[in-house]
Amino acid sequence: MEPGPPGCSRPAEPGPRLRRLCGADQEASVALLSRARAEAELQRCVPAVAAVLPAGGSGERMGVPTPKQFCPILDRPLISYTLQALERVCWIKDIVVAVTRENMETMKGIIQRYQHQRISLVEAGVTRHRSIFSGLKALAQDQPDSQLSKPEVVIIHDAVRPFVEEDVLLKVVTAAKEHGAAGAIRPLVSTVICPSADGCLDQSLERARHRASEMPQAFLFDVIYEAYQQCSDYDLEFGTECLHLALKYCHIKAKLVEGSPDLWKVTYKRDLYAAESIIKERISQQICMVMDTKEDEELVGHRLEEMLKNEFSHVKVTSGALGHTGRDLQQIILEQCYNFVCVNVGAYEFEETQKLLDVLKESDLSILYPVVVISDEQKLQDSLRQGATIIATLIKERNSGLVGQLLVA
Ligand SMILES: Nc1ccn([C@@H]2O[C@H](COP(=O)(O)OP(=O)(O)OP(=O)(O)O)[C@@H](O)[C@H]2O)c(=O)n1
Ligand SMILES: O=P(O)(O)OC[C@@H](O)[C@@H](O)[C@@H](O)CO
Image (tube, rainbow, N blue to C red; front, side, top):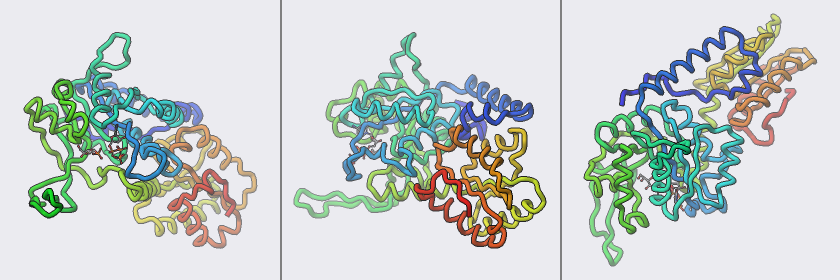
């Protein structure tokens, strides 16, 4: 498989509704059209790749009633972040999610609310391997009336591993194309030991020579499908490693690919807290200050911008006029900005702010990540530092009680 060109991954673009709403002008339309053409070209040159996401677990180790894949992070289910990560990769043509029958409606609601694309649902099994097998069967049914067709390469990725990036997906898929199977690995944090029957140490493994098997993994579809079809009931019931099935039943030695630290699986409650912190950090990296072009606002805006850059180590603050064409706003939003600060100095009519609020409410963006819009008043001009602190705290903490509020600071 030819590696996709860098940057071929599709950013989390706002939905088509936003483009209509923003009134994309000619220039922006051309940009979007060229991106669509590039993706279409890529789809033609990259062999078919699909993904199977096992999401049928009960999350016992999480210790809460809700299965962890549906636990909210910043008011949004964990699985939605994983789906968004895979949807950013334009060369994955189908995403098959295995969920239990009782959670099927919940999953359909998430797909609709967050406008996930390319998703097909299958019924999960009583074990993770059985859920994965269910997903593979759906892809193998190359039926004329089915939306799904058999891929050349299939990615298998746990639904509770939200931080998966295109580069590692490309690595495992490229390696699977060549070797038949590939999987992400990470260094061990703890040493692996083997206890004896009487509960004492029998042996310990040399940590430096061993690795933790993570996800994503990728396989030539025929290899992994054959392995699951030959699989013993014992393996289906108690196995935890897809790479092992490819080795045991198809004699394929998977290529091992070093993965990033963020590939870990959300398993315990502490993992949810960690995931929330990482998500907050990632979506706080860009602030968009929207101001009018009046001179005094420009002065306030730029001073506030400088102070915000002190609050966020790597923040990218883009200043742009809301403008009277939709291009500025559309360009701002297409840059995956999730934090907007409107600067109205003294102006009491919130016409421009309301316009931004209306567009954000209408766009996918405002439900993907809660957005806090702040409009300041004359007094903010007198205490810019306090204003910068308020804005930074709101963006970093994202207290759900303040979501979507128009704050007059
Ligand atoms: N019968 C099952 C069991 C697990 N999974 C999925 O496999 C992934 C990794 O499994 P794990 O972390 O073990 O999830 P749970 O089984 O839900 O967790 P626990 O063992 O704590 O119950 C998760 O996305 C989980 O939803 C699945 O699709 N079907
Ligand atoms: O065993 P669990 O169901 O908790 O999680 C599955 C993990 O074993 C699996 O995701 C990786 O180890 C790679 O195979």
